Image (cartoon, rainbow, N blue to C red; front, side, top):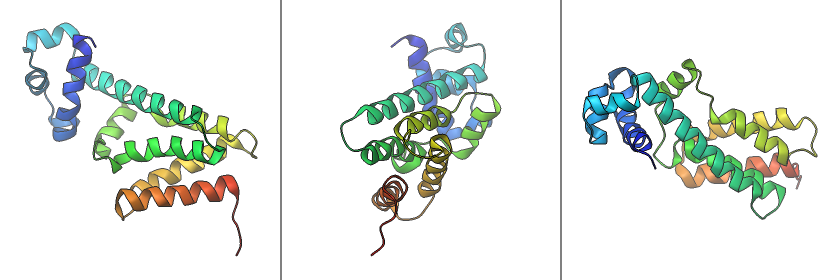
Length: 173
């Protein structure tokens, strides 16, 4: 990792704690253990730091989703694995950004991981009608599951049920 990466890594907690509007370059510098002048050697401003944080997070999510897509298992298992990455990034692991920061990233034009995840899912759903649309519906539904009550175990179970219904089709008893 580079010093720039180290600073961006330290900035994650600062943005998550204070939000974009209340995060200052001074807070970021203190968290990264560098002086403000040193911080400005790597980043022009708070927007640049935030963009680096968002790009790093997006890259981490996409790499994890690619591993899930390429893993052993049934198509449903692999779709579930990709969606688990989204679910966990949405907050079941306690490490997500508040909605304000997600909105800020969108407003700054930082490409969200969702676009990449839809394409990864569509690859797995290639044999189904409308794979891109199905992938988008699954991803949006995963975001809804992430906001539902019940904690991680319940959310994971709900996600698996959703995948089994969509990929395997409903079974009538």
